[in-house]
Length: 54
Image 1: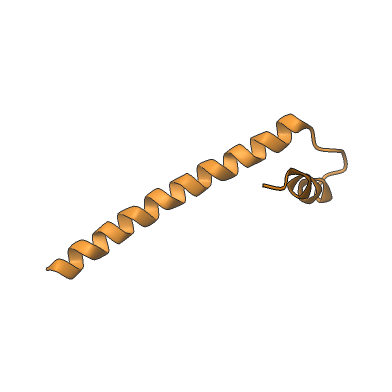
Image 2 (image 1 turned 120 degrees about the vertical axis):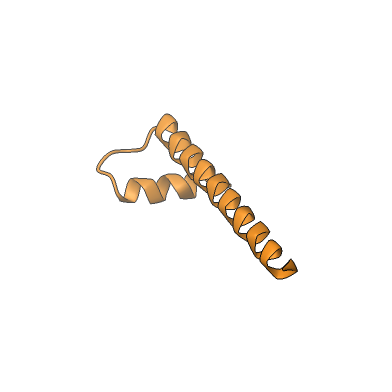
């Protein structure tokens, strides 16, 4: 993961430099969202597999 790239993208939308804590918070939220999306995809795939076996 390129932290400098993420930091530059965040700072492009702010007037001040982004702190390490803010950077890690954004990364943490993004990882949490990815996890939720994967859970949702898994549920959808399981449902599709159940529908195919009927």
